[in-house]
Length: 129
Image 1: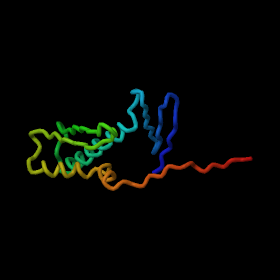
Image 2: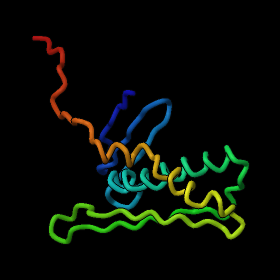
Image 3: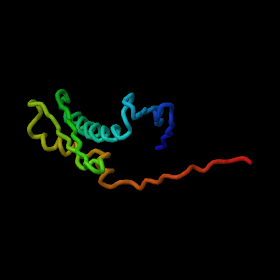
Image 4: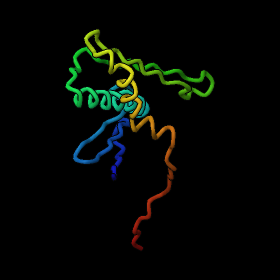
């Protein structure tokens, strides 16, 4: 997958891929990039949970996930992410533990466990003399 990242006015950043545009900003006018990263954890877990329910014919009405983040006070880096799944009383008891396992299949979570190599470099450009 290739994404084209463009810096816009007022430090807004656009990421374009697959015909979509994701807009970020640090001024509160759009989600900050790190907030999107954190949201990707919860929404990815939600996707796997929703798919689990769909495969079993279980309604997703009343299902939610609350995500809480803890940070190191000195480095400000995230030290803990807690995903609490809320299931309605009508959710079948026999699938409750399996629902948690389904949410744990999140590929964002798996990538954090085995992070990719990230290389930042200048792009080669054709400069005419």
